[in-house]
Length: 175
Figure 1 (cartoon, rainbow, N blue to C red):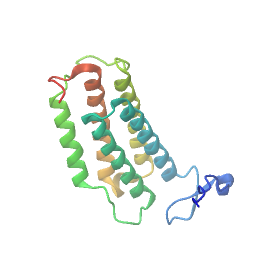
Figure 2 (tube, rainbow, N blue to C red):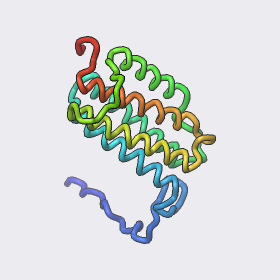
Figure 3 (tube, rainbow, N blue to C red):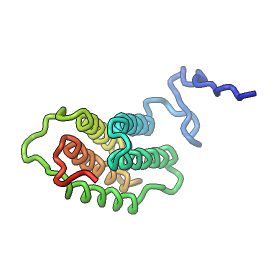
Figure 4 (spheres, rainbow, N blue to C red):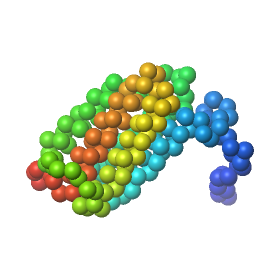
């Protein structure tokens, strides 16, 4: 006999609180909850972009970025634990940034999103990553988790480049 699906609604959050990994109950307007929501939203938009990118090098990169965002969320959720995300992740993102910058023609003018569906989805994800970065700063993570702030900053740059690449500005044939 198949197990039944677990309940989705516990109703415990009806009082305006939520449980956060080992932190007990927190108000839903706690800065950490806001950060988690912003990063989760960024990952969701990246999921839309990944669905549009399909089985491609960019699609593979986007799932890697989504997994990195989930690891950042883990660090935010468990501030008393050692950070999982660090300098190695920052170097990886910076390497990707340079790799995709070298293969993408960047415009010299202001970009209005919408040249392509994938590019527009990546631009939305980029703007949500920027908002998540601001939420990390507001929640006091600059000193506690500088790599997360730097990674979010670089990710927004990477998503800008990926969006321009998706808009057809790749400088050599897709491979």
